[in-house]
Image 1 (spheres, rainbow, N blue to C red):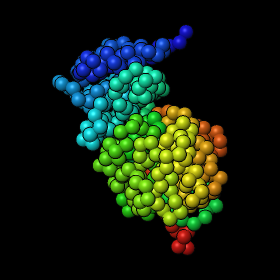
Image 2 (cartoon, rainbow, N blue to C red):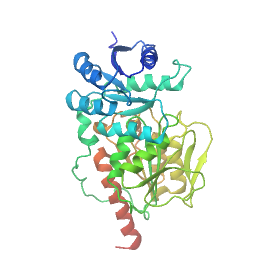
Image 3 (cartoon, one colour):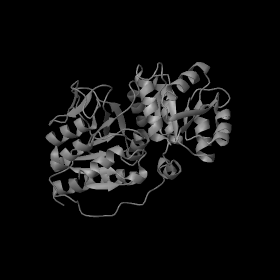
Image 4 (tube, helix red, strand yellow):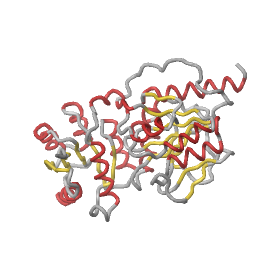
Length: 356
């Protein structure tokens, strides 16, 4: 017998609660066990009903979603998906701030039925994927406590000159993972960083704004033809593959989806492999599916240094797991160690480049 996924819906709008319930219960494996109109009700129902996962609105009376998330994660931690219907930078910034409090994902609210509305389909897929996530085990890295430093070891691949570029791919659970990594880097980092993060359409600008405000690096959405600058992070925009050229420029393409995605982490990594090869570092983070695995293997085959996030710190181990199975990962590291390792790799290669 299939175990039902028990969901608590939190939203002050009766219309949206009905639409979210209808969307979720269209899947036979999902059961809505309760509805709350504000954060206070959400906390009480969370203790009473013990749902497997919560969908959370942010703007609500009495107690907003951000406050509720902090209380729930402190008292009765469980997976929380933030739902928002606004695309403004300010409101998206507030929504992404909920990730710092422990929420796992920000999605758009559905405005139609599954099969007709991509947001409804995404909501069902992510609720089912994240219902079993052990959020208590992840509280340590979500709060970015100081990790044990990675072991000092020689570069596991022959050095081929300095690192010129870092490429990162991520999906489910990626925004807080990116924040952890970027928070460990310096604005004086000597290389640019290019990122593909699977995210709902309309959300990438808000993600860039949130990361720009909460990490030391400049973060922006990539523009086609712009020169990639050191110490700057470039996010792939909606519906475009992000690729790079030999003269360190961003190039956006409308070519067909790769691994079911546009932007695709595999498309990014393959471009980096072709243009930078051993002078690049690739990182594949938490996410559903397998996007990025083949691309990371292409970068590994080209001599690049490649890192996969380990299972213990992934929200969803799908993408890194497939890369590891392909032999595409030079190293497998817990999330808190990845930023430190990137700094180390860039510094080591710089020393090799200048001969000391």
